[in-house]
Each structure stands twice: as structure tokens, then as C-alpha cells.
Image 1 (cartoon, rainbow, N blue to C red):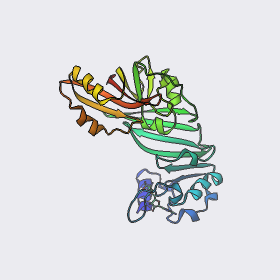
Image 2: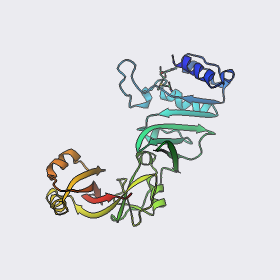
Image 3: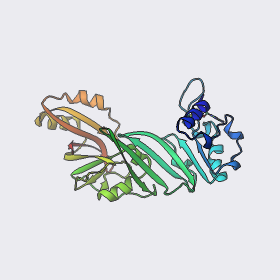
Image 4: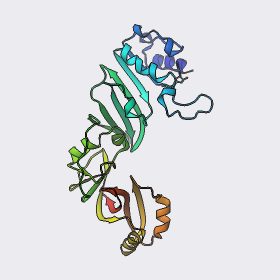
Amino acid sequence: MTAAMAAANAEAAGLAELFTVECGDATGFDVSRVDGVFCDPARRTTGTGRRIFDPRAYSPPWDFVTGLAERVPRTVVKVAPGLDHALIPAGAEAEWVGVDGDLVEAALWCGELAEVPRRATLYRQRGTEAHHHQLTGSGAAEAPVGPPRRYLYDPDPAVVRAHLVAELATDLDATLGDPSIAYLYADQPIRTPYARCLEITDVLPFSLKRLRALLRDRRVGRVEILKRGSALTPEQLRRDLRLAGDEAASLVLTRVGGAPTVLVGRPVD
Ligand SMILES: C[S@@+](CC[C@H](N)C(=O)[O-])C[C@H]1O[C@@H](n2cnc3c(N)ncnc32)[C@H](O)[C@@H]1O
């Protein structure tokens, strides 16, 4: 069926004479005939459709797929966004793709196609137009750490998965509040496609009692709850806060320097 659709697409695009569609086991294909390969291995179990988390259980198998990169000058492999960085072949570029804040896919670009070690590509739909932005880097840099500042940036999941938070920190002149948590803090609200920005009004060591009192004083009746590095359940916290009032606030549950902390703020438009 997929092969028939590929042939029909080539025909519809007027490219049929450039295509030969063959259906068979990919592991038996003679790749010496080609100078480029795109491989989208099956990442779900046949029958149950259950997601496969270990790439070694992909079909075709991982060793075959990554071995293609050694035999063909240009290889692209589609992979699960949760791929362990340790499995990325040396010299390959790993790209994570996000659409409107959701992490949707990842790919390895090998051989001549690798331009940088890590890339995050973000697509944003604005009305009828789609814009895209790309952040690149080594994926190995570490951002500086410091206390929370007036603006908090919540990086897009594709930036976090691509290990490009340090590169984003450089662009925003920002620091992490905790070396293991991907929230960035800066003195200025810089418009960026790579992160949401919140203006922080309060930083408290986490205490339900203190938070409840603060929100009551401010007449906050509606909250959005963001969290990284906190075991709290947002729904349970929202119930426990027993909110009342007309105001809205953003709550960020996190750790700062290892200590459970809650930040109160509002989105920067
Ligand atoms: C994630 S899907 C690919 C979807 C495809 N990119 C598309 O847009 O239709 C993986 C496909 O690989 C096929 N597959 C798994 N192992 C294979 C193998 N050894 N040789 C050829 N195809 C295989 C599966 O049957 C499945 O159709």
C-alpha cells in the first residue's frame, strides 16, 4: 500500500520518470546503487501497535539503520523524539522538530548532510502562514547558574530535547536557577520563538500555606501551573489552593539551587 502511494505521489507530482518504486525487505536492498537513503523505521509493535522505546527493537533494526550511514554518503533516519543522545552516531546531526510548542519528531542527518551536532527546528502557525526557526549548537555546552531574576524563560521542548538550552541562555543573556532544570532567568524580556517568557513577581520556598495566603491577598482565582523538577501534581495543588478572586496568575513549581521553590508571575505578551 505504501509503495503504491509513493508511486501515485511521484506520478501526481510529474516526477514518475525519476522514480523506481520497489517493495521488499530494506535489509536486503543493495545500497551501493544509491548515494542517499531515507529510513523511517517502524517504532511500534506489529499487531498491538504498542510504542517501542528501545531503538534496538526498531524494524529494520538499529544496527542496520545506523550502519547505512557508513555505507551511503547521505543517510537520514527518522527517530523517536525521546532518543537517548548516547545512541546518536558520531558525526551525525540530530534534529528535533516542534510545532506550536509540541515536540513532534526527530531525525538523524548523517554523512554529508550533517551540518552541526544538534538542531532544534520550530514551526509556528500564525493565521494562514507557517514560520520556522532553527537553533543549532554542540548540545554539550552548559549554561551558567544563578539566582532567579525578573524574567523566566520556559524553553520549547524541542530546544530542551536537543540539549540547546545553553545556546539559548547565551542568546538571552540568561542563567539557569538549577543546573539540572531547564528554566532560564534573565533581566530583560527578549522576544524569542524558542521559549515562553513570564515576568516573575514573587519567588517563595515552596509552602502551600504561604502560597495560598499570597494568592488570596492578590485575589487570584485562576492559575496556570508550569512545572519542571517538582513532584507536585498541578491538579491536586489547584484543589488545595482553594482559589477565589478575579485575577489570574502563572505558578512555576521548580527547584532553585536544589530547594523546592514556587515562582508567581504573568505571561509576557
Ligand atoms: C514508521 S513506518 C514508515 C511510514 C512512512 N514513512 C510513511 O510515511 O508512510 C515504518 C514502516 O517500515 C516498514 N518496515 C519495517 N521493517 C521493514 C523492513 N525490514 N523492510 C522494509 N520495510 C520495513 C513497516 O512495515 C512500516 O510500514
